Image (cartoon, rainbow, N blue to C red):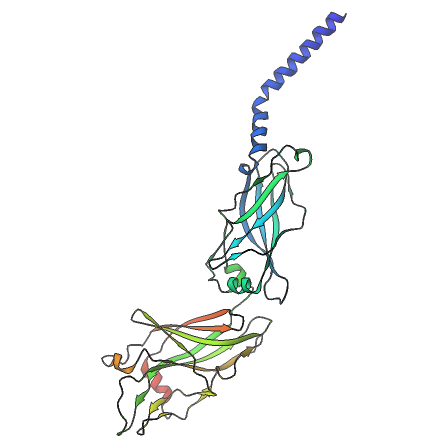
Length: 342
């Protein structure tokens, strides 16, 4: 009797060994995945979630990290450190998962949110990015490990995030720049008029902008600086806005050699600094810029050389955020029509 039972037991062991040997390939796969889990958890993308950039305190942004678990194990995202890179700086503020529970079961995909705290300077760097500039996540360190029955089996590993790139265009839609409408952009030279006026080839060029500015954000924007960059024959020329109560489109040198202005005048947006722009309350006025590097003597052969010249008006607020607007200078014949009767 016992001999029969022993034989049966032996047969069972042999069958079990056979089945065990037949599944060796599967166990080898599982072992390999446990040791190299980062090769089987793919980070497939990243996108913006919630963000609060304009608060006085507790500024942050959140990102959704998209993962695909191609392993045979349930895993948990637990490690989060490192930095996110802007073109101008590394953002090293505190990182944390939101919410804390972040398990990705075998064979499934999932999206997991993490938050980064931002300083005031971080926010300005973000808002000053071009919409098509890239955020890079190569410095972000995300680690996974086994969870539940696999916790002691799967070794913790860092996931690959170096391929993640994100433009700033979607984010900036939530934080619109100042709406700058340039109605007219004209130029001329401060030239000498009258029979006794001394002709001076060094008289500078001046540019006058007639514009409306509207803040589309809820918080007020306080403007401190107006700069104009004009491109002439491949060279950029920079000037800051003149101060004063009024802008006078017509400026000239009198017979007595002093500078004078015509009767036409427009409120100067660079008069009271900072210029406080409140939500959806347009501010109208003018700005004037004198370019001493574009003096009259350089354009004797072509006084209309600046017709169609491209320019960028750069408005800078008290936080250092830049609000740009591009434009083209009108022809001098259009400028002259503004000065008629001036």
